[in-house]
Length: 321
Ligand SMILES: Nc1ncnc2c1ncn2[C@@H]1O[C@H](COP(=O)(O)OP(=O)(O)O)[C@@H](O)[C@H]1O
Image 1 (cartoon, rainbow, N blue to C red):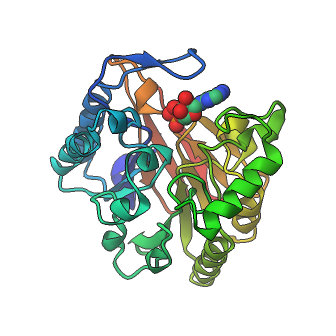
Image 2 (cartoon, rainbow, N blue to C red):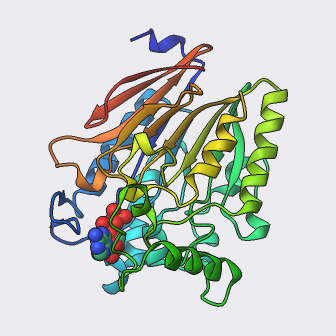
């Protein structure tokens, strides 16, 4: 690893904390253990590490609290617990929204909550006025971060009477004939058409296109963040964004795009697209045993980024395309 002191800046990444004050459990398929109560302790360790390493900012990749909180009337308490850990540090935290945010809160409530970090974006643009939780900002001169809303077109978090909900339901029913729409269709990439995923509207794709065109012109280096992964080689198909292909086309068309970082698939994943863009799916904290960890600190240089992984998260050298 290169001398970290020479980095231009660094930032922290963490995914799927899914905190709930309940005993350990299992995932739906009963293949992995979930450490609901301990997840906040792992978050605490990560925040302490970032405070010590003086990162410029942290990106929380979504699913900060688990859907179980809703049925226990504990959503706000759980969110307070998680936010209190972040607040122990003075580092700026940017929050991405995942499916579990919508299991706990309406989109309207989320917009007014501490999980809406768009106000920290400074001079960057956003889509908040269009009820899309996407924004961009420059973490350091020559660099740009874009946070996407992967549940923009979705049946969770969109009012049943809304056009986007109807559009999402139509798409789901076209691809998924199961009575329970959380149960995936049988084959390959089609498995992504489940209720707990979502996609990007035309409006959001156009905005991203504009942001990246400007970044190309300014010769900036862009990192894109989303709860849902968009590359089939970086995740299990069941976790992919519905219209991942459209998003990939936009990323591939812009030379400014360097890295795409997501959560959602708790096993994590990684690939480098033929375009040279690296796709990181970060391991989920919720399925990380108490004696280890899962988070990353990314050191940014002129010619590459270095992901220093903790615990289940591997180190990676990410050369710019
Ligand atoms: N194969 C499946 N069939 C039916 N329901 C499923 C399946 N996988 C997940 N679910 C349901 O979908 C929802 C989201 O799944 P979950 O594994 O909790 O997602 P996450 O990984 O985001 O925590 C849960 O309500 C879960 O019970």
